[in-house]
Length: 294
Image 1 (cartoon, rainbow, N blue to C red):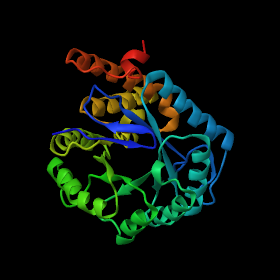
Image 2: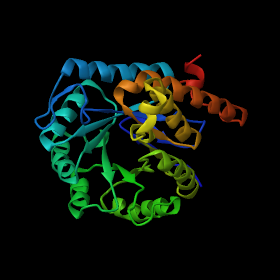
Image 3: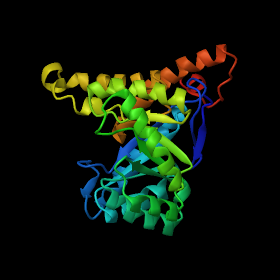
């Protein structure tokens, strides 16, 4: 299957593993994030937030791994403020991640008013979508969205693949021309399933596929109590590496603070696979981690 590459806000995602670097997406303004002072009104520490965004971009430049921001908001008022701020300090793509469809739909009006459509990725469309979501996405002119490979009817790998296939025509109806598939990692068992689905979907559909592998570690209740706090970061890095080894085009790697160790880790894997691409007759671009991290 031909592997599709989409350009969103100047960032290219998708393609053949090894030939292109993994796109890394850090989350900001999430529940409990230290930069947030009032998560309903959208009050936050602007200086610290900008430092974190700049830090991610610094590691993106060092490694050659493109980056995006997952901008989380618990209300449309807060999400609008967060989007306005991030759009003003960086030109990378922004995942519009309201905690409910109602929040996201309301913020689509703001996106349309501000002309941010080309940089926005709607996060996310699920099998239990609301019809209003489809209408508002089309009206706002947002052409990219995360499609969540998840269904409560079938928890198997096959069920997740079928869930995506059922969502694709729905997303197209909403005007989504650049779908990104999230294989929906919730815990350690679904990390294995999510990685299997990455392989299945890339072979079957050729679309850009990724996941939030960090969720497997965030929900590991015995990690710190049984293994110690020193095991958390290596485990987080390993979970993300597993997804990249499975062929992930992008990773929602978790809190943006993790950029300082996630970027070097994933760049190392990308460089290793880049060498294989080189031996296969494909020349990675000069910005590829293969030529950046040495």
